[in-house]
Image (cartoon, rainbow, N blue to C red; front, top):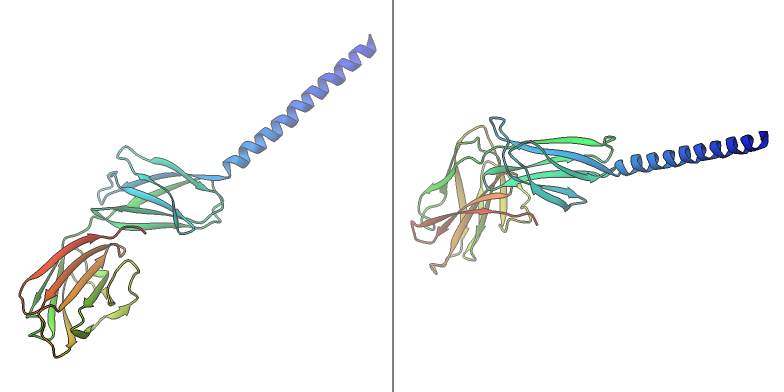
Length: 244
């Protein structure tokens, strides 16, 4: 009888031990799985703090990993791989694009990402002078925002040797902008008058042009003005450059 109780006791201890070991490994697996991802709580708000809907993109290793839309009712949930650098990119037609960068050494399981969206202001381009007859041409930029951290890029036809903008530093032409030169506009002003000079060949084929592009909103939104030879006509075109 005593022997039976002893066997029973050993069996109970073995079962309890097996349960404890199983629980340990299951718990460890759950914890390990939870560490594989960081849970993101994403939202975008306007200048008044109200939640707004816009596109967001999660980028890892320079590529789009996930994408979605924010909601008006609070946060949208998403996740990224643990122990990996990533960026959350917010973009829409009526807001300036913005990047939120995060390092790979985040020792967390949850992260709140709040984008404080800034509406794209009204920016107008105009000029004085007649292209091909007057040199320089004076470009006028008027904006409801401060004209800062914008690019002014230029492109010209074969009848022009070169064109130059004075008073601003040259800037590397972004790969998505098909222009010859770019200059970085940094000021505290909402309006600027910028002289544009150009050298031309002694030809007159009525097909030459000088194109000016203002690039803003994290260099993904453009306003283009095109001067045509011996014409007071010019065209302004808005182009939203897409993520490549």
